[in-house]
Length: 296
Image (tube, rainbow, N blue to C red; front, side, top):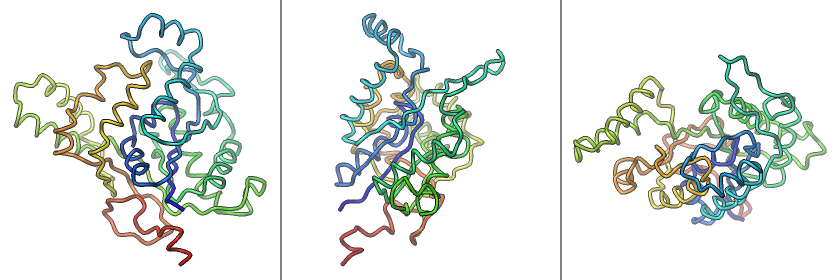
């Protein structure tokens, strides 16, 4: 049986902006990759003003259905498997306006309930690696923070036969990673390379703002997966989420040929491991034997 990777995300489109090239690479290598979307993205707004009037009308009429269609296209672009955990998008309340998260949405559901739902997925799929967000959710959206909490709780609980005994036979996931796409060294490296080669490039000002924005963020990445051959698949998946990702999105600021030369990896932090491995890593499955090897 092949290696298996489970990536747990908050909303449809998160899987395409965080680790998409890694997913495409491992699928091409013969691994099984399953993405879980904890919510349906129903509370999302249309962020692409270039969307056709017909598409905008469809999205306004049925945002949940529209985003399911987008997710199916992204899934096809990456070659992954995908399931919905089934919770409702909490939205991003404006604290300054006194807004709060609506009851019954993902971030308000008692943790033990959503943890059991993910434990069922883990025990059925039996992944060797689980990838999710850090305790800040990558950014402080309530669903991203809840995704972190659920993922870490399920990583522990799935291995314990006494927890959620009706959710299937216990399964111990070998490694737990946090996704670290917003790597400050990555932004700096690309900015410096672009400034050296194209000092008049109008993107430099915007990139400089990104470098400054993430300058104080520590570089916690331990694991760097070379995925430069799959940047186009990543971009195709991003474009599939047309309601959320306009063609001039900052996601497309980096020319892929230069990015492949300067920073060809997607980056992760190994947080927990039940197998021996040496850091830094270049493979999320490092230290994990194939099941054929394990039973040899």
